[in-house]
Image (cartoon, rainbow, N blue to C red; front, top):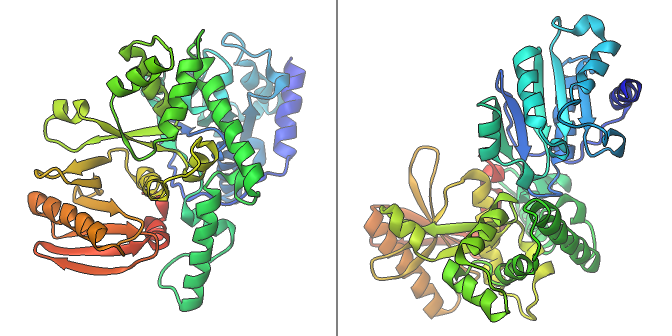
Length: 436
Protein backbone atom coordinates (compact mmCIF):
# COMPACT_ATOMS: atom_id res chain seq x y z
CA UNK A 1 0.00 0.00 0.00
CA UNK A 2 2.81 2.42 0.86
CA UNK A 3 4.49 1.86 -2.50
CA UNK A 4 1.19 2.48 -4.31
CA UNK A 5 0.65 5.72 -2.36
CA UNK A 6 4.18 6.88 -3.18
CA UNK A 7 3.51 6.20 -6.86
CA UNK A 8 0.21 8.15 -6.77
CA UNK A 9 1.86 11.10 -5.00
CA UNK A 10 4.72 11.24 -7.51
CA UNK A 11 2.37 10.85 -10.47
CA UNK A 12 0.32 13.75 -9.15
CA UNK A 13 3.40 15.97 -8.97
CA UNK A 14 4.26 15.16 -12.60
CA UNK A 15 0.74 15.61 -13.98
CA UNK A 16 0.02 18.69 -16.06
CA UNK A 17 -2.76 20.55 -14.24
CA UNK A 18 -5.94 21.37 -16.13
CA UNK A 19 -6.96 24.74 -14.72
CA UNK A 20 -9.77 25.76 -17.09
CA UNK A 21 -11.33 29.19 -16.66
CA UNK A 22 -10.08 31.05 -13.60
CA UNK A 23 -12.84 31.39 -11.04
CA UNK A 24 -13.59 34.76 -9.47
CA UNK A 25 -13.59 33.38 -5.95
CA UNK A 26 -11.25 35.06 -3.51
CA UNK A 27 -10.37 32.16 -1.20
CA UNK A 28 -7.95 33.10 1.58
CA UNK A 29 -6.03 30.44 3.46
CA UNK A 30 -6.09 31.18 7.19
CA UNK A 31 -3.19 29.90 9.36
CA UNK A 32 -4.03 26.77 11.38
CA UNK A 33 -7.33 26.26 9.55
CA UNK A 34 -8.14 23.89 6.71
CA UNK A 35 -9.66 25.62 3.70
CA UNK A 36 -12.80 23.74 2.60
CA UNK A 37 -14.38 24.25 -0.83
CA UNK A 38 -18.08 23.36 -0.88
CA UNK A 39 -20.65 23.56 -3.64
CA UNK A 40 -23.10 21.64 -5.79
CA UNK A 41 -21.87 18.63 -7.75
CA UNK A 42 -20.09 19.42 -11.03
CA UNK A 43 -19.69 23.14 -10.36
CA UNK A 44 -15.90 22.86 -10.81
CA UNK A 45 -14.48 22.24 -7.34
CA UNK A 46 -11.72 19.87 -8.51
CA UNK A 47 -10.58 22.24 -11.26
CA UNK A 48 -10.66 25.11 -8.78
CA UNK A 49 -8.33 23.10 -6.53
CA UNK A 50 -5.99 22.77 -9.55
CA UNK A 51 -6.11 26.56 -9.93
CA UNK A 52 -5.10 27.01 -6.30
CA UNK A 53 -2.21 24.53 -6.73
CA UNK A 54 -1.10 26.38 -9.85
CA UNK A 55 -1.10 29.72 -8.03
CA UNK A 56 1.19 28.29 -5.36
CA UNK A 57 3.54 26.95 -8.04
CA UNK A 58 3.62 30.31 -9.82
CA UNK A 59 4.36 32.01 -6.49
CA UNK A 60 7.49 29.87 -6.12
CA UNK A 61 6.35 26.89 -4.05
CA UNK A 62 8.40 23.81 -4.95
CA UNK A 63 6.28 21.17 -6.67
CA UNK A 64 7.77 18.59 -4.31
CA UNK A 65 6.02 20.45 -1.48
CA UNK A 66 2.60 19.76 -3.05
CA UNK A 67 0.77 16.69 -1.76
CA UNK A 68 -2.37 16.01 -3.80
CA UNK A 69 -4.74 13.07 -3.41
CA UNK A 70 -8.14 12.49 -5.01
CA UNK A 71 -9.86 10.10 -2.62
CA UNK A 72 -12.34 9.14 -5.33
CA UNK A 73 -9.49 7.31 -7.11
CA UNK A 74 -10.44 3.61 -7.03
CA UNK A 75 -6.82 2.74 -6.21
CA UNK A 76 -7.35 4.44 -2.84
CA UNK A 77 -10.49 2.49 -1.93
CA UNK A 78 -8.55 0.71 0.83
CA UNK A 79 -8.18 3.93 2.83
CA UNK A 80 -10.32 4.37 5.93
CA UNK A 81 -10.36 6.31 9.17
CA UNK A 82 -7.70 4.09 10.73
CA UNK A 83 -5.14 4.22 7.92
CA UNK A 84 -5.55 7.64 6.25
CA UNK A 85 -2.27 8.62 7.83
CA UNK A 86 -0.55 6.28 5.34
CA UNK A 87 -0.77 9.11 2.79
CA UNK A 88 1.41 11.28 4.98
CA UNK A 89 3.75 8.42 5.80
CA UNK A 90 4.24 7.72 2.10
CA UNK A 91 4.94 11.37 1.37
CA UNK A 92 7.62 11.69 4.07
CA UNK A 93 9.22 8.44 2.95
CA UNK A 94 9.74 10.16 -0.41
CA UNK A 95 10.87 13.46 1.15
CA UNK A 96 12.12 12.72 4.69
CA UNK A 97 14.11 15.96 4.95
CA UNK A 98 10.95 18.07 4.61
CA UNK A 99 9.27 16.79 7.78
CA UNK A 100 9.02 19.63 10.34
CA UNK A 101 11.43 21.64 8.18
CA UNK A 102 9.29 22.92 5.28
CA UNK A 103 5.64 23.82 4.73
CA UNK A 104 3.73 21.08 2.91
CA UNK A 105 0.68 22.09 0.85
CA UNK A 106 -1.89 19.31 1.14
CA UNK A 107 -4.85 19.03 -1.24
CA UNK A 108 -7.45 16.33 -0.60
CA UNK A 109 -10.18 16.16 -3.22
CA UNK A 110 -13.43 14.22 -2.63
CA UNK A 111 -12.35 13.83 1.00
CA UNK A 112 -15.86 12.78 2.05
CA UNK A 113 -15.35 9.36 0.40
CA UNK A 114 -13.39 8.25 3.46
CA UNK A 115 -15.54 8.02 6.57
CA UNK A 116 -13.97 9.59 9.63
CA UNK A 117 -11.63 11.83 7.62
CA UNK A 118 -12.21 14.69 10.08
CA UNK A 119 -10.00 13.26 12.83
CA UNK A 120 -7.12 12.74 10.39
CA UNK A 121 -7.30 16.30 9.06
CA UNK A 122 -7.70 17.75 12.55
CA UNK A 123 -4.61 15.86 13.72
CA UNK A 124 -2.72 16.91 10.59
CA UNK A 125 -3.46 20.57 11.34
CA UNK A 126 -2.24 20.16 14.91
CA UNK A 127 0.91 18.13 14.40
CA UNK A 128 2.37 18.97 10.98
CA UNK A 129 3.61 22.10 9.24
CA UNK A 130 0.89 22.00 6.59
CA UNK A 131 -1.46 24.19 4.60
CA UNK A 132 -4.57 22.09 3.94
CA UNK A 133 -7.28 22.38 1.27
CA UNK A 134 -10.31 20.09 1.13
CA UNK A 135 -13.09 19.72 -1.40
CA UNK A 136 -15.92 17.29 -1.89
CA UNK A 137 -19.57 16.57 -2.40
CA UNK A 138 -21.34 19.37 -0.60
CA UNK A 139 -24.07 17.43 1.20
CA UNK A 140 -21.43 15.27 2.86
CA UNK A 141 -19.20 18.24 3.63
CA UNK A 142 -21.50 20.68 5.37
CA UNK A 143 -20.17 23.82 7.02
CA UNK A 144 -22.06 23.13 10.24
CA UNK A 145 -20.69 19.59 10.42
CA UNK A 146 -17.14 20.69 9.68
CA UNK A 147 -17.32 23.38 12.36
CA UNK A 148 -18.29 20.77 14.95
CA UNK A 149 -16.07 17.90 13.93
CA UNK A 150 -12.97 19.94 13.14
CA UNK A 151 -13.06 21.83 16.46
CA UNK A 152 -12.78 25.19 14.76
CA UNK A 153 -9.85 24.16 12.54
CA UNK A 154 -11.68 24.63 9.20
CA UNK A 155 -13.10 27.53 7.20
CA UNK A 156 -15.56 26.88 4.35
CA UNK A 157 -15.83 28.73 1.03
CA UNK A 158 -18.67 28.30 -1.45
CA UNK A 159 -18.26 27.62 -5.14
CA UNK A 160 -21.18 28.00 -7.57
CA UNK A 161 -21.55 27.27 -11.28
CA UNK A 162 -20.13 29.99 -13.56
CA UNK A 163 -21.31 33.52 -12.93
CA UNK A 164 -21.93 35.60 -16.05
CA UNK A 165 -18.53 37.22 -15.47
CA UNK A 166 -16.86 33.81 -15.43
CA UNK A 167 -18.88 32.73 -18.46
CA UNK A 168 -17.58 35.73 -20.43
CA UNK A 169 -14.08 35.09 -19.07
CA UNK A 170 -14.33 31.66 -20.67
CA UNK A 171 -15.18 33.38 -23.95
CA UNK A 172 -12.18 35.74 -23.51
CA UNK A 173 -14.46 38.77 -23.63
CA UNK A 174 -13.92 42.20 -22.12
CA UNK A 175 -16.40 42.38 -19.23
CA UNK A 176 -15.26 45.33 -17.12
CA UNK A 177 -17.11 48.64 -17.71
CA UNK A 178 -17.17 51.05 -19.42
CA UNK A 179 -18.16 49.35 -22.66
CA UNK A 180 -18.15 50.69 -26.19
CA UNK A 181 -21.04 49.86 -28.52
CA UNK A 182 -19.32 46.82 -30.03
CA UNK A 183 -18.49 45.38 -26.60
CA UNK A 184 -22.07 45.97 -25.47
CA UNK A 185 -23.45 44.03 -28.46
CA UNK A 186 -21.03 41.17 -27.83
CA UNK A 187 -22.00 41.04 -24.16
CA UNK A 188 -25.70 41.06 -24.99
CA UNK A 189 -25.12 38.13 -27.35
CA UNK A 190 -23.09 36.34 -24.66
CA UNK A 191 -25.95 36.86 -22.23
CA UNK A 192 -28.32 35.07 -24.60
CA UNK A 193 -25.91 32.12 -24.67
CA UNK A 194 -25.66 32.17 -20.87
CA UNK A 195 -29.45 32.29 -20.66
CA UNK A 196 -29.62 29.11 -22.72
CA UNK A 197 -26.71 27.17 -21.25
CA UNK A 198 -26.55 28.27 -17.62
CA UNK A 199 -23.38 28.14 -15.58
CA UNK A 200 -22.37 24.50 -15.14
CA UNK A 201 -18.91 24.44 -16.78
CA UNK A 202 -19.36 21.08 -18.48
CA UNK A 203 -22.46 22.09 -20.47
CA UNK A 204 -21.76 25.66 -21.58
CA UNK A 205 -20.66 24.62 -25.08
CA UNK A 206 -23.10 21.74 -25.62
CA UNK A 207 -26.28 21.64 -27.68
CA UNK A 208 -29.68 21.72 -26.05
CA UNK A 209 -30.35 17.97 -26.09
CA UNK A 210 -26.97 17.01 -24.64
CA UNK A 211 -27.22 19.78 -22.05
CA UNK A 212 -30.63 18.52 -20.93
CA UNK A 213 -29.32 14.97 -20.64
CA UNK A 214 -26.36 16.05 -18.49
CA UNK A 215 -28.50 18.33 -16.30
CA UNK A 216 -30.80 15.38 -15.63
CA UNK A 217 -27.78 13.26 -14.78
CA UNK A 218 -26.69 15.92 -12.27
CA UNK A 219 -30.18 15.92 -10.79
CA UNK A 220 -30.15 12.16 -10.30
CA UNK A 221 -26.66 12.21 -8.80
CA UNK A 222 -27.60 14.92 -6.31
CA UNK A 223 -30.74 13.12 -5.21
CA UNK A 224 -29.42 9.57 -5.09
CA UNK A 225 -25.78 9.99 -4.08
CA UNK A 226 -25.97 13.09 -1.89
CA UNK A 227 -29.36 12.58 -0.29
CA UNK A 228 -31.02 9.18 -0.69
CA UNK A 229 -27.85 7.16 -0.01
CA UNK A 230 -26.61 9.53 2.66
CA UNK A 231 -29.83 9.45 4.66
CA UNK A 232 -30.55 5.80 3.81
CA UNK A 233 -34.08 6.44 2.58
CA UNK A 234 -35.92 3.18 2.02
CA UNK A 235 -38.79 4.89 0.15
CA UNK A 236 -37.18 7.72 -1.83
CA UNK A 237 -40.03 8.37 -4.25
CA UNK A 238 -41.50 11.13 -2.06
CA UNK A 239 -38.21 13.04 -2.04
CA UNK A 240 -37.90 12.73 -5.83
CA UNK A 241 -41.48 13.90 -6.38
CA UNK A 242 -40.91 16.82 -4.02
CA UNK A 243 -37.74 17.85 -5.86
CA UNK A 244 -39.61 17.88 -9.17
CA UNK A 245 -42.51 19.80 -7.67
CA UNK A 246 -40.20 22.52 -6.40
CA UNK A 247 -38.17 22.82 -9.60
CA UNK A 248 -41.42 23.15 -11.53
CA UNK A 249 -42.37 26.09 -9.30
CA UNK A 250 -39.18 28.13 -9.12
CA UNK A 251 -39.57 31.66 -7.71
CA UNK A 252 -42.95 30.69 -6.22
CA UNK A 253 -44.22 30.58 -2.65
CA UNK A 254 -44.54 27.38 -0.68
CA UNK A 255 -45.33 26.18 2.83
CA UNK A 256 -44.46 22.87 4.43
CA UNK A 257 -48.20 22.24 4.81
CA UNK A 258 -48.81 22.74 1.08
CA UNK A 259 -45.89 20.46 0.17
CA UNK A 260 -47.11 17.80 2.59
CA UNK A 261 -50.59 17.97 1.07
CA UNK A 262 -49.08 17.66 -2.42
CA UNK A 263 -47.20 14.51 -1.47
CA UNK A 264 -50.32 13.12 0.20
CA UNK A 265 -52.25 13.66 -3.05
CA UNK A 266 -49.68 11.42 -4.76
CA UNK A 267 -50.19 8.70 -2.18
CA UNK A 268 -47.14 9.42 -0.01
CA UNK A 269 -47.69 9.28 3.75
CA UNK A 270 -44.87 11.61 4.75
CA UNK A 271 -45.09 13.65 7.98
CA UNK A 272 -44.49 17.39 7.91
CA UNK A 273 -41.26 16.97 9.84
CA UNK A 274 -39.85 14.77 7.07
CA UNK A 275 -40.94 17.21 4.37
CA UNK A 276 -39.15 19.98 6.26
CA UNK A 277 -36.06 17.75 6.44
CA UNK A 278 -36.20 17.13 2.69
CA UNK A 279 -36.23 20.86 1.94
CA UNK A 280 -33.27 21.39 4.28
CA UNK A 281 -31.38 18.55 2.55
CA UNK A 282 -31.93 20.17 -0.84
CA UNK A 283 -30.31 23.32 0.54
CA UNK A 284 -27.45 21.34 2.09
CA UNK A 285 -26.70 19.92 -1.37
CA UNK A 286 -26.71 23.43 -2.90
CA UNK A 287 -29.46 22.28 -5.24
CA UNK A 288 -32.41 24.37 -4.04
CA UNK A 289 -32.51 27.50 -1.88
CA UNK A 290 -35.29 29.02 0.21
CA UNK A 291 -35.93 32.70 0.82
CA UNK A 292 -38.03 33.86 3.75
CA UNK A 293 -39.94 37.03 4.56
CA UNK A 294 -38.02 40.06 5.79
CA UNK A 295 -39.51 40.82 9.20
CA UNK A 296 -38.25 42.10 12.53
CA UNK A 297 -40.02 39.16 14.16
CA UNK A 298 -38.09 35.93 13.56
CA UNK A 299 -41.24 33.92 14.29
CA UNK A 300 -43.21 35.73 11.58
CA UNK A 301 -40.27 35.45 9.20
CA UNK A 302 -40.02 31.66 9.48
CA UNK A 303 -43.75 30.88 9.68
CA UNK A 304 -44.74 32.87 6.58
CA UNK A 305 -44.53 31.19 3.15
CA UNK A 306 -41.06 30.92 1.63
CA UNK A 307 -39.88 31.21 -1.95
CA UNK A 308 -37.84 28.55 -3.73
CA UNK A 309 -34.92 28.90 -6.18
CA UNK A 310 -32.62 26.47 -8.00
CA UNK A 311 -28.82 26.45 -8.32
CA UNK A 312 -29.02 27.09 -12.08
CA UNK A 313 -31.75 28.60 -14.24
CA UNK A 314 -30.89 26.47 -17.30
CA UNK A 315 -31.01 23.34 -15.18
CA UNK A 316 -34.61 24.26 -14.31
CA UNK A 317 -35.45 24.27 -18.02
CA UNK A 318 -33.84 20.85 -18.46
CA UNK A 319 -35.73 19.37 -15.51
CA UNK A 320 -39.09 21.05 -15.96
CA UNK A 321 -42.05 18.81 -16.71
CA UNK A 322 -44.17 21.73 -17.94
CA UNK A 323 -44.69 22.54 -21.61
CA UNK A 324 -44.40 26.25 -20.97
CA UNK A 325 -41.73 27.60 -18.62
CA UNK A 326 -42.24 30.96 -16.96
CA UNK A 327 -39.32 32.98 -18.34
CA UNK A 328 -39.94 35.72 -15.78
CA UNK A 329 -39.41 33.21 -12.97
CA UNK A 330 -36.23 31.95 -14.65
CA UNK A 331 -34.92 35.51 -14.80
CA UNK A 332 -35.73 35.95 -11.12
CA UNK A 333 -33.91 32.68 -10.39
CA UNK A 334 -30.86 33.88 -12.30
CA UNK A 335 -30.79 37.13 -10.33
CA UNK A 336 -31.17 35.26 -7.05
CA UNK A 337 -28.15 33.02 -7.71
CA UNK A 338 -26.11 36.09 -8.66
CA UNK A 339 -27.06 37.68 -5.33
CA UNK A 340 -26.54 34.44 -3.41
CA UNK A 341 -22.92 34.28 -4.52
CA UNK A 342 -22.40 37.48 -2.54
CA UNK A 343 -24.85 37.04 0.33
CA UNK A 344 -26.14 34.16 2.41
CA UNK A 345 -28.95 36.25 3.90
CA UNK A 346 -31.49 37.21 1.22
CA UNK A 347 -35.17 37.89 1.93
CA UNK A 348 -38.29 38.95 0.10
CA UNK A 349 -40.27 41.97 1.31
CA UNK A 350 -43.97 42.63 1.71
CA UNK A 351 -45.22 46.16 2.15
CA UNK A 352 -47.89 47.06 4.66
CA UNK A 353 -50.37 47.09 1.78
CA UNK A 354 -49.37 43.57 0.79
CA UNK A 355 -47.27 44.36 -2.28
CA UNK A 356 -44.19 42.20 -2.80
CA UNK A 357 -40.58 43.08 -3.60
CA UNK A 358 -38.58 40.09 -4.82
CA UNK A 359 -35.36 40.66 -2.87
CA UNK A 360 -34.08 42.69 0.05
CA UNK A 361 -30.55 42.28 1.36
CA UNK A 362 -27.73 44.07 3.15
CA UNK A 363 -24.42 45.00 1.58
CA UNK A 364 -21.06 44.74 3.36
CA UNK A 365 -21.67 48.10 5.05
CA UNK A 366 -25.08 47.03 6.36
CA UNK A 367 -27.02 49.16 3.87
CA UNK A 368 -30.35 47.68 2.77
CA UNK A 369 -31.05 47.24 -0.93
CA UNK A 370 -34.30 46.48 -2.76
CA UNK A 371 -34.31 44.55 -6.04
CA UNK A 372 -37.32 43.77 -8.16
CA UNK A 373 -37.14 41.43 -11.18
CA UNK A 374 -39.49 41.94 -14.10
CA UNK A 375 -38.93 40.66 -17.61
CA UNK A 376 -40.52 43.73 -19.19
CA UNK A 377 -42.17 46.96 -18.08
CA UNK A 378 -43.83 47.59 -21.45
CA UNK A 379 -47.34 46.86 -20.20
CA UNK A 380 -48.67 49.83 -18.14
CA UNK A 381 -50.31 47.62 -15.50
CA UNK A 382 -47.09 45.68 -14.90
CA UNK A 383 -45.05 48.87 -14.77
CA UNK A 384 -47.42 50.46 -12.26
CA UNK A 385 -47.46 47.34 -10.05
CA UNK A 386 -43.68 46.96 -9.88
CA UNK A 387 -43.04 50.66 -9.26
CA UNK A 388 -45.78 50.85 -6.62
CA UNK A 389 -44.32 47.93 -4.62
CA UNK A 390 -40.83 49.44 -4.67
CA UNK A 391 -42.00 52.94 -3.80
CA UNK A 392 -44.00 51.65 -0.83
CA UNK A 393 -41.02 49.59 0.37
CA UNK A 394 -38.63 52.53 -0.06
CA UNK A 395 -40.93 54.71 2.00
CA UNK A 396 -41.31 52.13 4.78
CA UNK A 397 -37.57 51.46 4.97
CA UNK A 398 -36.37 55.02 4.46
CA UNK A 399 -34.48 54.24 1.25
CA UNK A 400 -33.87 56.65 -1.62
CA UNK A 401 -33.05 54.16 -4.37
CA UNK A 402 -33.93 50.67 -5.60
CA UNK A 403 -33.44 48.53 -8.70
CA UNK A 404 -35.58 46.74 -11.24
CA UNK A 405 -33.75 44.09 -13.26
CA UNK A 406 -35.31 43.59 -16.69
CA UNK A 407 -34.48 41.57 -19.75
CA UNK A 408 -33.17 44.52 -21.76
CA UNK A 409 -34.61 47.80 -20.47
CA UNK A 410 -32.56 50.50 -18.79
CA UNK A 411 -33.19 53.94 -17.39
CA UNK A 412 -34.21 55.80 -14.26
CA UNK A 413 -37.67 56.33 -12.78
CA UNK A 414 -38.08 59.21 -10.31
CA UNK A 415 -40.53 58.56 -7.48
CA UNK A 416 -41.53 60.56 -4.40
CA UNK A 417 -38.93 58.85 -2.23
CA UNK A 418 -36.00 58.88 -4.68
CA UNK A 419 -35.13 56.95 -7.83
CA UNK A 420 -35.72 53.48 -9.22
CA UNK A 421 -32.97 52.32 -11.55
CA UNK A 422 -33.78 49.98 -14.44
CA UNK A 423 -30.95 47.64 -15.41
CA UNK A 424 -30.80 45.04 -18.16
CA UNK A 425 -29.93 41.61 -16.80
CA UNK A 426 -26.64 41.31 -18.66
CA UNK A 427 -25.33 44.49 -17.07
CA UNK A 428 -26.68 43.69 -13.60
CA UNK A 429 -25.02 40.25 -13.68
CA UNK A 430 -21.65 41.77 -14.51
CA UNK A 431 -21.71 44.05 -11.49
CA UNK A 432 -19.48 42.78 -8.72
CA UNK A 433 -18.41 39.73 -10.73
CA UNK A 434 -20.94 37.55 -8.93
CA UNK A 435 -18.85 37.21 -5.74
CA UNK A 436 -18.08 39.51 -2.84
